[in-house]
Image (cartoon, rainbow, N blue to C red):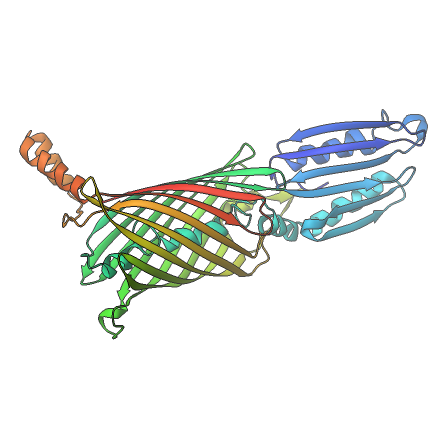
Length: 436
């Protein structure tokens, strides 16, 4: 067989049934499909230890590859092999004079269709780190949504409540757990945002998310650079009390995995985000966010190492248009804690995907955040040299003042999120943000 792309882990249950009624059941776990196919080839289908008295027993092998069930089966005393992967739309039958001949036909088919098989696994597998429920394409729009501040539409909210928008740095931490088809993918990320104000309301926005994914014991990693430009439309168009920003977005990143370079890819995107702030009075506000991104996943030179039956294959490009629309209901409480305003919000976001068929085509998120917002005029600046100079000179007074300024300007936020979608059994997450 030729599913040797190392989409680890692979688990398999094999049931061998004889005409006299007795059965043999085997359970396997492999680090790659190549180990599985070698076992199926040499130890099960044509192994004389199982072909008792010359009988060709019925064999049904169900292998789980990234949440997809690959079923290879043959009937008693039959040489015909069937391959079925319903989630990927694969239904094939191979009829040779012997089981060995049928296996050869299966191998030839897999070799001739290897690029399409890899594309389907990357796109449609529930646990794929590209197109799966925890995959890069599905997760990244939410990172883009938070590019302008410490969270969903944070800076248009500052404008709405009359605060000065200033340079600031935000460090976020997040954890999400996705469950699909009885499998789990845990996602850990540390996005870092930097907003550089260039004139009244205008800002250059940088976002660098670093992500680690644990999928049933297999590690994947991703990193990216997001770049945006905040355009304060309401500074130039009469919108009354409403505040409106537009943010053109661009992102480029890479994702790699322990899975034999199959999912080592360059991912880039471009799009546009709209943030509209609506004041309701008495400390209440609504933020409406609409966002469009076009994502493309393409192979890099590591794919030259991907071979099937010794033949070099090319992994097709995956492209998707993604529409993310959401609303945030915000309340500023008339209560101070640590000198900061206590605030809370409830968010809802709907994400729709078109283009390449992925494991899901839409998802809905609902979240709750609570935090402390400051009106400090302390601006963040990259003052590494000044800090180093004060340390060298042991200037305690300046160091203490710098520390107090930074503490006075800090904001905190704690959030929880729950995601629902077809293809997801459950998905939940939490995040924190620290900005100044």
